Length: 215
Ligand code: DX5
Ligand code: ZN
Image (cartoon, rainbow, N blue to C red):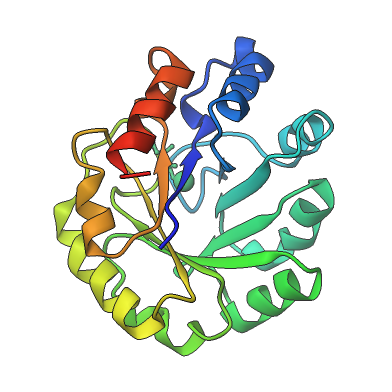
């Protein structure tokens, strides 16, 4: 399967954000991972609609928007208008997951459902045929720079087995050059990395991570 890297701007230096996104593009990463946190669903606040809308004017990179917010159904439409290409909402936060997926798909965008570490694979099974992506969190959502949870690999394998090659499986949290082979071996094909990309030289980090993905 094609492996894709999705650098998370949560770990970017916001003074340099434009330049850093240009570096991500130059390194050839296909996606930009945008972590939206509301201080309710997760104990942290990041950024939101205004940022997405603002950076959309300057880049065509695929915006991979990870909504860590409660009641995602209330905001999906606005994130699409702001420029999101992929919208991933949390299974634990959605009041009506089918409605979220339909809303995203009806606007011609790609729909993802995220599972926090404590949520089992069964939560995603009823929706697997309609989803474009499943995000298996490999840390508790909320912060960058945490430790990768190996336990999640069983869940990744289960979802890959059920979904086959059609579905994208994204992993997010604690991924480094040294451990990226692990989720890939389990069946993941979209790799989010924050700290591992934005700490140090961005282009060099992406190139090294890409090599370690066997790309
Ligand atoms: C955590 C976010 C992640 C985070 C990953 O809640 O969803 O996308 O930025 O950061 P690292 O790669 O540093 O674990
Ligand atoms: Zn994320």
